[in-house]
Length: 205
Image (cartoon, rainbow, N blue to C red):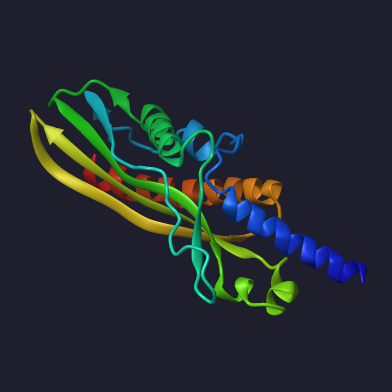
């Protein structure tokens, strides 16, 4: 009886979180050694770095309708796209040298950077949702960043990173969503900055 009551409480809490999904959440993020510690052997010289942030906060995709997945946006107090921009700035500062003999500059265009969690179709099915309400959910981060390398004022090459980083996490309560978001950011940093080190810095810069 207590178990059933607890599951019903979790269902009510989940619906409450979906309804309040657009409320900004304060989520402190730890530093990442991938960003704060130099990981590039031969640091490139860059005269100037310019950022253009076109990304926007995520929106609810597929409203709460029976048997279809809903993508619930995660809107932290510090938007995802601001976290991404700050991370890239720190990574470039750590792994490059200011000044270039050939007047090489870098333009970073952040086109997509938003996070979400998936409220699955089965979560909405009567009775079934009581059995799976505590199960892990998919958490994802849509990311698209374009890097334009300019030499003497002209674009010499372009590198684009586009991916959907996904992890499993809990959305049972607000604190669980915060913890899952923190894990998602950690995984995005691991994938994204290892890719930048191996591709952008080794092959383009």
